[in-house]
Image (tube, rainbow, N blue to C red; front, side, top):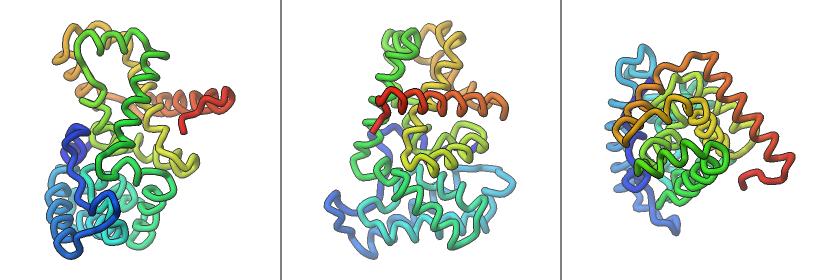
Length: 248
């Protein structure tokens, strides 16, 4: 669906908040966040019949800036507009703000967007470890071609997949995160996607071909295929819980 705001790599994503000690810069920080939010909202869902409207952009901006004012450490980070948009897609005003705050504070998304993006790096490391264990031929292909999972999965995680996949996937992931109270499903879904693509991925011969395949494949998934992906990820979570090996 959309593109833009979350597509930067993990090491250059823009987070506009206070210091890691939580000391904000007041009005200047909010003004900077307002400018960044306005810029991102003009490019994340171009042409979408509903999300690209002025009214929806105003609603999303209101949710993001309300949160930034309450959480000066995180403030606004590229990618946050996507879960805010999902909240505004189904809920109005205060309810959308509450849902966004729950996702951030109670479901662990706040840690993903914190300055330094340490949690995002940990999720990418978990993805690498899971691929090596569960989809070794894809892991070896990436290693051989010099493809870092950060090149594609950072934007997947930061935008809840909404920058690259049909929104139905992101909506389902919100449900799972609310039920589990963590964002770990984002990593499991990445593993499921790459497992489902294994037969075609291993035919790629270099970085450009791999990235082109992933970027093209994202937009071809049907709702039924995405349902299978999420079901696979949820089954994996149940196995982890039974084995006592769940992440976190």
